[in-house]
Amino acid sequence: MTADADHQLLHIVIGGELTHPDKPVFRDLKQVEFVGAFPNYEEARKAWKARAQATVDNAHMRYFILHAHRLIDPSTDKHEH
Image 1 (cartoon, rainbow, N blue to C red):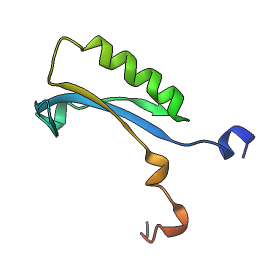
Image 2: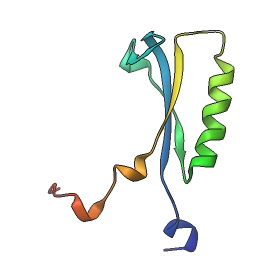
Image 3: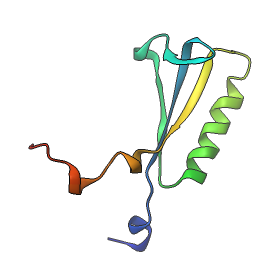
Image 4: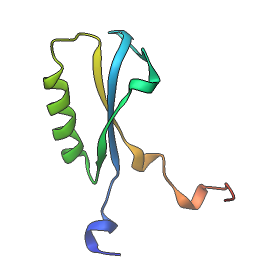
């Protein structure tokens, strides 16, 4: 594993149109946009900001940064494949 891979903190950026601007409920899950997966928060924030600014005219559009590195822990993953 490289030094960069050792320090990777996976972040995922997704977004789409919400049913209401104050609730994180997507209008149509089939239309949720996967912006990308990023190795750190800074890179994810750049992508989030670009997509959020591109859709600023639609009050129902929201983009989110998911801290995927907090959800992935192979040492506690008990699922068999």
